[in-house]
Image (cartoon, rainbow, N blue to C red; front, top):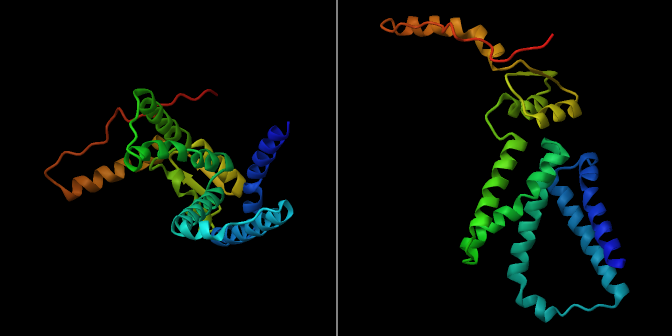
Length: 218
């Protein structure tokens, strides 16, 4: 029962990180620093209460690795905190927990471990799943954060992933997703005329098959 309580408590503690990060008006680097300091003090008090001692001789032997791992952990925290600010908590957390998949692949180089066919297939499916969910593409929705930083009231784009729409709603900025055809069809004739003028030897025409591929129900 105690073990279950500790697991639930640790999960709840981690789940509240985004709440604090979103409501603390400090850079991610400072938040990570203060978090590390508070954690160090808490661990020191825990050792005093439990009467645990630290063998400094053993610690000295592992100082290089401790410094490297500590630096890696700080970068890990900073990137996670930045992700909370630039996308939804769900997307940031999902991306964060993709790390074990990366470790699985890195282990083939770092530890000379082989991958089974099952592991390889799981890696491919996990990667494709993450890309599909977070919408990694060159879509206009990827400019949402830039629009927010520049103080824009609305972003007009041809496409936007679901999490981009959620983020726009959360940030209070308008998002007009007019579709590729809606944003590109209007300029096609103008571009055709410009190209024809620039290259007189070419026959340039706006394709008649250029129609909106979507059907809208009234």
